Structure formats: C-alpha cells, structure tokens
Image: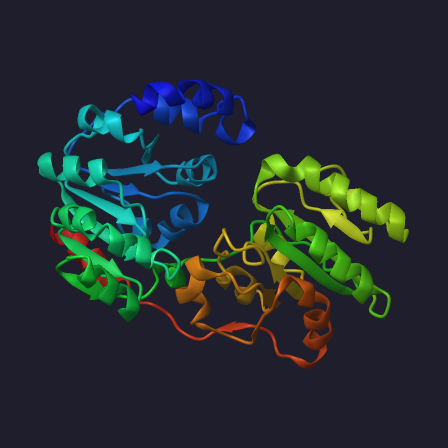
Length: 375
C-alpha cells in the first residue's frame, strides 16, 4: 500500500539526474533483471566508497563468479569497473522474487536490509556482514528496535566488525560470531589516474563538498588569500550540483575580483578558483594540493568522507566535527584539524606550523579472503 502511495513521488524523482537510473531500476525493475547464474560471490554495497573498498578483495577473487549490487548511481558506476555482474538492489518487496541462490552474500558496512538477508538465507546463501558498523548517531535507534535486528541477525553467519565498539553494539543486538578486523578501506589502493603539474603556489582543495559547505570554504579562502598566495579547487561530492556550485563561486569571484574557471572547459590551473566538474579527478587533485578541506563533516546529517585519500597524498587535512560515519578511519590518522564551520580560516592559518596528515596503520585482509574461499 505504501509503495503504491509513493509511486507519484518515485516517478517525479526519476526525472532528476541523481536518480535517473537508480529509481527505475530499484523500484520498477527497469533493466534490472535478477542475476543469470547461481553459486557466485555476491557483494552488496551502498555507494562509491564501499564499491571502491572492494578492490583489494576482488583482486584476489578474480577467478570467481562475482556479483555486485548497489544503491546509488555513483556506486553503480564504480562497481562496473570490475569484472563483475552488476545490478541495482531492488526495493524490498521485490526481493523474494529477485534473490537467487549464491554461494555467499557479503554485505558492506550498514546495509541492513531485512528482506535481503532473510531471502538470501532461505535461498541457502551464506551471509557475511563485512566492515560492519553502527555509528554513535544510530546506536540508540538500533537498540530501540532490538527485537527486529535480533531477528534479522539470526540469519547472518559472520559479522566482521570495524572496531571493538561496533562488536559490543552488535553483541547487544543479539549477533553471534563477531570478529573485529578493522576497516577494510585501509587496504584500498589509492592512486592517481592522471598526473598534473602542480601550480607554483599553495593549493587548497575543498574535497567531496556538500550543500552549504562550499560557501563557508570559499569565504575562509578569500580571507586567507589576502595574506597568502594560494589557489582554491572545489570538488563537489555530487555531479548534479556542479552548476549550482559554479554559480556560487562566480558570485564570490565577482565580489572579490578573483579569476574563476571550470576544469571541464579549460584543463589548466591558471585561475584563482577552479571548479573541478569532471568525475574521477579527486585523487588527481589531492596529488597536487597542499591543504585538503574535507567536506561532509561540517553539517550534522552527512557523517564525513574518506580521509585516507588526502592523507595518502600528504595533504594537511582540515575537516568538520560531524564525521561519525568515518570515525574508525580517522582513528588511524595523525595531524588532522577538526573544526567548526566558522573556524576554517583559523585552521588554514595553523597549517603553516603543522605536519602533513598521515595514516598510521594497515589491515590484514587474509582472514576474510580465507573465509570466502572456504565456503
């Protein structure tokens, strides 16, 4: 009934670029048939970051029959880079008819879809929760529905938790066979796809930014630049916001007499501010940047983004305090500034006296690989 009532909204959203492919596929099964074969290794991820995290595992499993489902379009595009059969995960009411028996289903992070887990179990598919986490922000909600999650978790064979805190939270929900392995994103290969010549001045990048974050970053940059020769690159998290962000940057450029360009039009770094409006360039930009202002953590409802990428390229990282989804990753970093959104300018000034951010630990994926291979 709720699905029928939501149909007009779903149809409306499907016209938006962000949902152009995912909504028709997930809610109407458009070009989203069930997997053709059985007894493969099926990974389910939500979006871009989780899809990327699969790379070191899939490299070892290259001779296996790999299937991947995603929720978002960015996750779908990333998953299609692998030698795998890739689909969108259908809405839950379709799963009893859509789920096909596989050797194993590996669900990443917090993708706890009840019907997915239950029907995989009834199709005699082993279920593993990998990189499993329950954030500080979500733990109370989970505990209020403990009866529900306890029922769901009885169909899960193994839970590989990110941290000891996560292990205790899953234990409180009734999970069994829990092992702490750390965050598999620590094993991910972070590299550039194209090498650019660094400008002969300090480069600041606003990476994976969201709505309201670009304006506070540009304001801090304008103030900082009055005393420090530098350039600002902005890389929005979502491509559908490129035009919106460019118009915002244009307002500042006119007001402050700064030059501005779009990277998609002129692939040079000559202007004071540049909108990076092409997909897949973020690591390439981190590679020529001195300071990374990492988005997704200055507003309360997003939860932060992967800090390993800017750290890999020795950027001095500044981020907000709302990084609850990435808390485990930040635990492995040194020399990061965590600030409120009105403190970015002061943080920029402090970078003169701080060392670059670095990752202090690694992870061993061998136990996970062995578990998959033995099933």
